[in-house]
Length: 312
View 1 (cartoon, helix red, strand yellow):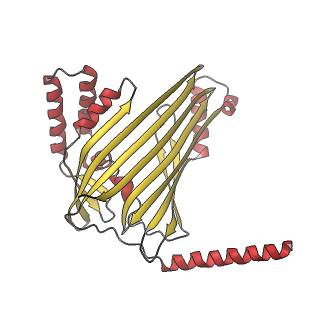
View 2 (cartoon, one colour):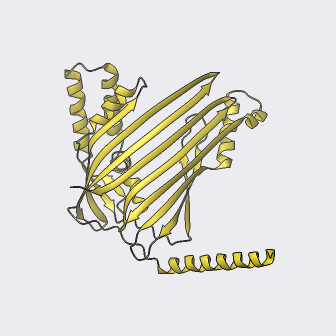
View 3 (cartoon, rainbow, N blue to C red):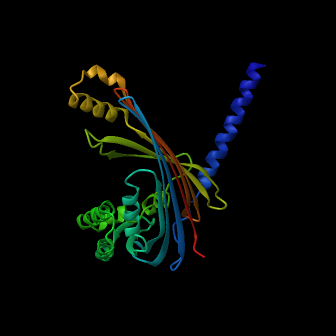
């Protein structure tokens, strides 16, 4: 009987594998090609919970960031598309003392039109009216000054303005368009079922060598008939980069290298991304970042929900 069960298991596995191979052979990824003049509402909700236990003191911080924005496909170009983007509404819920400053920074860019050039996948390449954006934030500073606003709030907007004067058009495309770069990641990928694409990015640590994050993108499911596809994005920190970082921290603190055994850093991030008709329509991300540095622990849990729908 055990051998018979094993044989049936092998048969089922073979059938599943052949079906997956057939789906991969039939799969043709729809191209990203939204109609010129089409308008889309992008809703982004980010929930964050941070638990700390430092020097015996436990703390909990929670915040919720929401941004509603409108994307308009203004035209096609030789390299891709011309986009117009603006935040229509934003909010920030938190009990932190810096919450008013955060709300002011969000408000400074609300209803500011950002025009950008994008490639064929919809990835923003550069902001084409950066000077207009700078002027709009400058006017916000003037309004805050005239109203005698809280100095902390005014300082937050000045900091944003200062940042805008130091970045170029390409950097602005990464910083001013919120989720557009992330949404473009699963448009025109060229991936097939069964493939996995990996890349590494360096994350500045601020107090030592950068941490190297490994990002793996694959297709979780794909329907050749409808063209709908669900991607899975997984993120982890490279173990070797963690060791280099921890060694630097131990050295800065004048600690014995054996103290490395008492320190840990981990990232577990998973994102499910839904694409329909070649356009990303939803993104669901859950991540947990945890660290234990000589008994001081931090656990940060993030959940991000993004939806894209036609404007009414």
